[in-house]
Length: 355
Picture 1 (cartoon, rainbow, N blue to C red):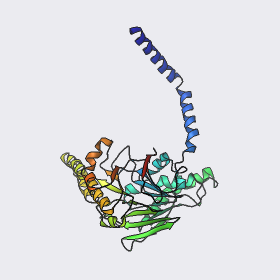
Picture 2: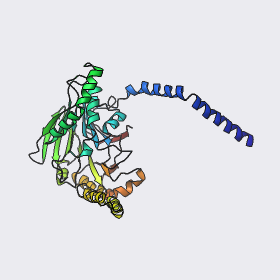
Picture 3: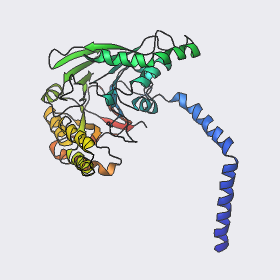
Picture 4: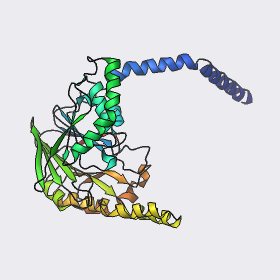
């Protein structure tokens, strides 16, 4: 038995030595195989007609290595719309197999930094991955013009470098950047996009002192998805999202956040403690999101923009609190890469992971 053990150890050592000896050619072979597979990654190619919701970012401004900033993608037929673009959102779209070149427009719910700080990479990939001859349309309430102008100014030198390097055929100078498509909310709701069987309705939400702040409802072939943006519990959301199949709602667990606030206060960090106190009143708790989904008659509630960060699923029950008792449907704690598919004129909702 001892000889066998020694033999196994010798083989293992020799195998490890061989692996290091051939590390360079093995590494090149692995990269070559990956390069051959990469161009074929297109999650949209196999999607049946219907309404699809992808989560390209379920995090918040709080650092979380497993979640990008707020980002959702809605696919309706051949239309692809991204809602908010937090840090890492474009990276996740690529990992999910959704090319930025296929994105028809970006819709912003409001202009908090964590909802817009991933716009630069999305603008760049929209241009370079599809030789786009037109900038990325960015829809949002009044103020979107300032946001878009700022990103365009920041990326202006980069644009000249890429045109000079790659040429007009690859990166047309008429493309690149973004163009603002502002809309005005004269009431509590407004249709902001319509065509190809899809209707997109913006609705006001309560994210005071952030104003304007909106959510969006997407209706396509008898199915509906609502995305809250950032909001406290909102009566208008409940009214506009009546009968929606899915509501994606931001969620902050105040008991957890209060523990974090108290810890910073105990360490003498009054500034950070004040921030953790302030954020508790303009996000809905999981329980409040569940009540809203129940009152709206939704079939599925997906929680996103999760505060605080949740490094593992073991923490989900504590995060949810009493939410399951307040909603008759299913509740999903959103994770980056999830895709929900809603076939036309049906009650079916399927879910799979794209990354």
